[in-house]
Image (cartoon, rainbow, N blue to C red):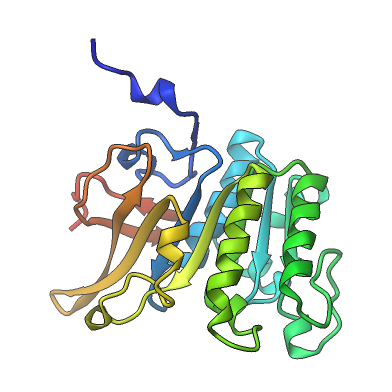
Amino acid sequence: MPVDRKSLFKRVPSGIPGFDDLIEGGFPENTTVLVAGGTGTGKTTFAAQFIYRGAELYDDPGVFVTLEERAKDIRREVKSFGWDFKKYEDEGKIVIIDGVSSSVGLPSEEKFALEDKFNVDNFLRYVYRVVKSINAKRLVIDSIPSLAFRLAEERQIREVLLKLNTILLEMGVTTVLTTEAPAPQEGRISRYGIEEYIARGVVLLDLQERNIELKRYLLIRKMRETKHSMRKYPFEITSDGIVVYPSGEIY
């Protein structure tokens, strides 16, 4: 008798139309997924959609740690998709942690913000406390390279990521980490070459030229406890957010 894989592992829907069809209904619960891609491929949109749809559709509280853009800029940008982050922040279902102001020496206007002098252990403890304070089920850290920029030496990133992985397992959240993908000729998936090893899932976002136009594609490079294809699927960033086309019909 064939095993019903969907019943073996609880799934966390991504909130991205078409994507969950490719991963047996969603991410395995309490797993860490790396979303890697170049500039403009949609990494932050993917991550924000995961958090917003979680609160809106599945009543899952979520924490979004922004290390690249100010929290108010995130709120403004996602409004173009009709996503009202502030509404769910007021309801205690979404928290945005401002990790940008302190890095540039500015005081933060946000309720949740990292301290002035960056310390990895304090960063991890703070994120842990915020996650527990709202009983978050989803977490985003956007992005790993921005976290590395705050370290005195780049070689420390390996130690930090290993610590991060341990903390994430203790938190019991389903996590999306974003990172930059290096040029294909470098032979690595992620910027530092270790991010993909701490993650149990890896999703690659890419821009490719087709008929003198740039098209977006998605590849599920790895997803533990999940049967998935290794082909590239087209996707678009629409007025409602990211939509993936499993059949490839759009192109």
